[in-house]
Length: 409
Image 1 (cartoon, rainbow, N blue to C red):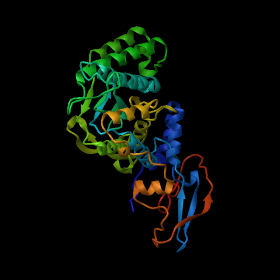
Image 2: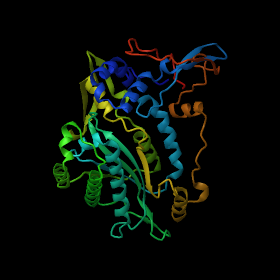
Image 3: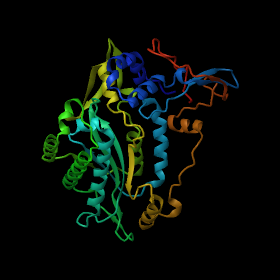
Image 4: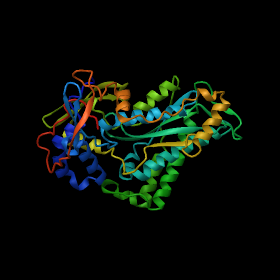
């Protein structure tokens, strides 16, 4: 049986969340309040649940419902595994590359105050950069595809918006009659990518400013003046922007493994938490600026919550997007052409598996059965009673009880 983490993000929110709402309520966005409440209530009596009983030995298990919020660490593992399994049918038998586009630190505060606008610009600039450079006959001369995933955090939980792109190492010729591969072990020149990415990003940012789509508050209020905004853009233009292309993956299985780790990740997972005591939270982190040096960081609980909430996305914002050959429109037909040109037999294509029931999917992902009795190991757990939701008003006081064994919501 998988061990339940000793400390969870939910524990931090339950113990310190109400005080944080009191002291920081004026600055909390509605979506941040919703995320706090969802994580606090996840898999507790506040959301209701059910009682299951073994049909052989009579053992009972209480299971509370999940919040299903995409920012909740406990609710993403199964969602991520389900999503990754659905991608298997779209993989091609070619090298895949991992390209990262990072917003420079001068523009990060602006992105934080204008998440929807600036993150959309990041997606547009990065995808257009890859598609345009790949289509250039001096480089590859092909129509490529890519999948992009937005991350907004660093290991220390500070705001660090960047885009992870997974790209097949080749694409279709302009006439659609050839598969054009990139050079072995090399995708596209990062310096060329960086320069175009910088130009496209700043062009789109300037247009957003001219259209009045950007907001400026507190320490950024002065940027509402055209001269001040132009100075900011000028400083960003004089910098070298970070675009990093990692070596190719070892094969389709590594691509799926990577996607499983990155697509449904939240700012910090429960297993990185070390302890919470005396109003402070300690967690593990890697210092990438010091050679991935590993250590622990301790923050006041209020600061920990503040940093976590920096990464709450606007309601409805899509943080996983596809472009080119992998765009939703026409993806199936274009991938079929790619496979034919790559010599992939039709019967070798991995079909999209039909969705399993929740119980089967849970066992596939976790290796744990929520149907077999954990005591006698022979009986089947049957749902015998529903538990109504019990809403909690005000401070949590004592933490609502966790299920006695596995959550099955």
